[in-house]
Amino acid sequence: MSNFEPKILAFLCNWCSYGAADLAGVSRMEYPANIRVIRVPCSGSMSPKFILEAFRQGVDGVWVSGCHPGDCHYISGNLYARRRFQLLKNLLEYIGIEPERLHFTWISSAEAGRFQEKAKQIVEAVKKVGPANEKKKLIKELKPIA
Amino acid sequence: MLEGYTKEIREAAKRLIRDKKVDCVIGYSKGSIPLVDAPYFAYTEEECENLVWSGFCTKNLAKYLIKRLGKNALVAQGCVSRSIVGLINENQVKRENVYILGIWSPGMVDRRKVLERVGGKEIIDVKEDEEKLVVIGDGWEEEIKRKEVLRQNCYTCASRNAVLFDEFIGEKKESKGGGDIDNVAAPWEKLSIDERWEKFRETFKECIRCYACRNVCPLCYCAECFVDESRPQWCGKTQDEADVYTFHILRAFHCAGRCVDCGACESACPMGIKMRVLTSKLEKDIRNMYGYEPGMELGAIPPLSVYRPDDPENFITP
Image 1 (cartoon, rainbow over the protein chains, first blue to last red):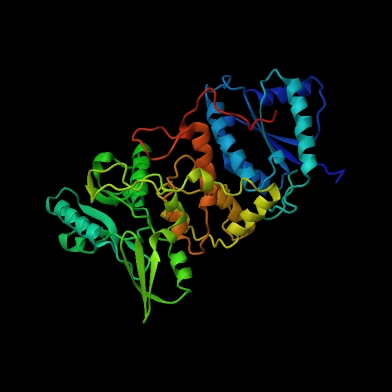
Image 2 (cartoon, rainbow over the protein chains, first blue to last red; image 1 turned 120 degrees about the vertical axis):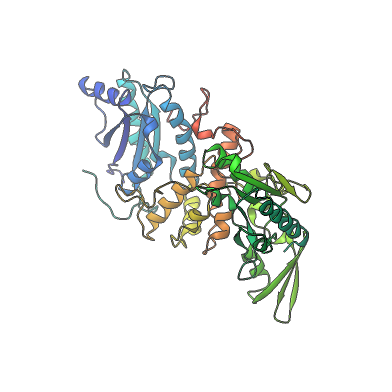
């Protein structure tokens, strides 16, 4: 288990968290390579389907990050998303999916340091719970993500 | 069949048809087998004679108002009237196109509990009043208290009287089911994370993906359901564990903040799956966090279509 390298899918908002990841990159800040990024227009455009699909495709953890409440490029996308994510996380925890696998954060495009810190923290958290789909099967066939 | 109510429903229905107030009265008729009553559409005065009211009216008739033409009258107990309110709020039904015959529900009976009670013997007929059922078989009879064989959701009913109606059939009676929903909702919360998954697996492993729960649900009116989408396909069509789980998680989530706990899904399930374990968790969270109860108020905004600046956000990774 000690050399388990999880795959974590990150859905980052185009206007903030993606920018933070970009800034972390150009600033030469190091963070674990376990994270695969998908850029989304807004955290409000995230559907629970995407998160379940990620688990179905065999990732060990999912991370969704958007703008701080009040800072949304579309005024209120992340505020609608907040209610949805709160319920979804509670529901998935309720049916037995470890809360350590599902992460949400608010990161602005200037917070490269915060992005780096969260990335490290999330990878550690997922490493601790181990591979998904070992005993709790949410995938049909393992299609590895490149 | 509850004779008094049945008589009043038939009279009201005939009057509405005769006065051309509505094109059709939607209610229940005696089913082809005992313990199951069927939805029924009465267009003429003669057909109104087939309408009944009983403890087996488990289907949610609000479903039939969606995309229906003309003006319809509907027999609606508490949960059905709440579904109608929800559909009006979601702009699926126009208030002026529906004439609601409000009624008090004695609490609907869980067919499986009755069958278990009589030990699987064949039942020919059931007589009932508000307090008890008399189950009649070939050469035997058994009396059962209604309270002992109600559906789980009827014990914690929030409103047995219709909340919205144009005319009330009979008298308004005790509106609460008696039980406290917060005590029984989300039964797995106290278990450990692995036990919860085990319960989840156990609960849904019999699912045959017939979609009866979806088809009977008045909330499921999407032009294309996520299970029917193929490009991209979010949920496979097989009985593989993963597809079954995805279906049930998303089905429950789509009902969040809208489910009135009518129990039609559980009553319709041919495998006896108790899917209210998921919806009750979501509704409990919504009550506690956003103080919202679906279908109680015309013009209310669904909790997921609105936000407050100070909404709880303990899901954020600290």
